[in-house]
Length: 442
Image (cartoon, rainbow, N blue to C red; front, side, top):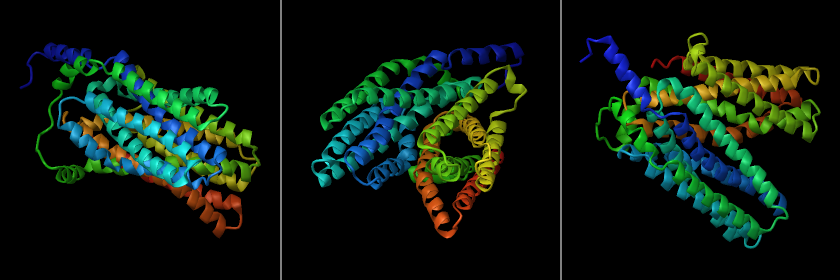
């Protein structure tokens, strides 16, 4: 029944907004994402370097281990489905962080053992990276599900930006601190540092979540509850896949993240080979791209969470046109391959970062909205499906991007043209992903 008094509806809506997750609560959830980022970057970056440089082992080993932790995240939909069966997400986030923390410490132990007993070290590392993938799946999926059902629509773009920036802060802070304390390298020191980082992550997560979910329970209960069909997991996924918007959004996530991640491993070699950039210059180029990503994220957060929203379009607008702008920037890199050193590569890469940041943060905010589009109760399995698609895309993206560039250079004698061929394929992927994003109705 609808209220006959318009002012009553306004008061009811304000009450709902008042009990939704505020900025302090969003920052507390961001702290959890910071902890996830801190442990993950330690295993995918620092341990990667130790294996290749200090232990002089093939780069294939950390490459396979990092890909493994991505592919394990195919379990994200199942983890989200299980968390939806209960009323609280907090226990799942904390338990997932515990698995992730133990996995991070075990990964450092496996790295240390690689230098003493290769087979034993490889076995321990394999187990550790499986645990990391499982931990990220449980904690990350439940965290985003809690964020989706606890934040009102006006704050979603800003909330997504805050949480992701805090994750990036976790990456940077952990890298700086570990870099300061790890020299001179010893296996025991690596294990000790990794264990401390993992313990801090678990403690901070527990404190950040203390009674947080209780504060927004009234708002979560005010949302209409999704129809409970009590289907088993496989049938629930099959039913969900019949939803046109969910299917298109899943395809959008996979294709856009495939294009997004496949550029990482080939952009710096492209700048070095075609534009004669030094190692320092290519590193600065990567930093310039990340600065663009940050600007794109902040731009969408400001426009999507303020009075500018009605002037600069919706989240759908930023998602679609962010992908198209990314495609144009990738096409610019393709042209740069033909033009050579005369092309404004730095500006091109910066604009690529802005476009990437804009579409990715708009997509995350859209994901939070679509997760509760039909009411709360199924947000975990939906976010799990999209998180699994993203993880598989990231695992494949880096691998396929490198393979495609190598294959193109083998088939095409001109290196610049070979790289341009790969960039135009990535531009095409962004155009396709924009088409899927445009077809999402709600």
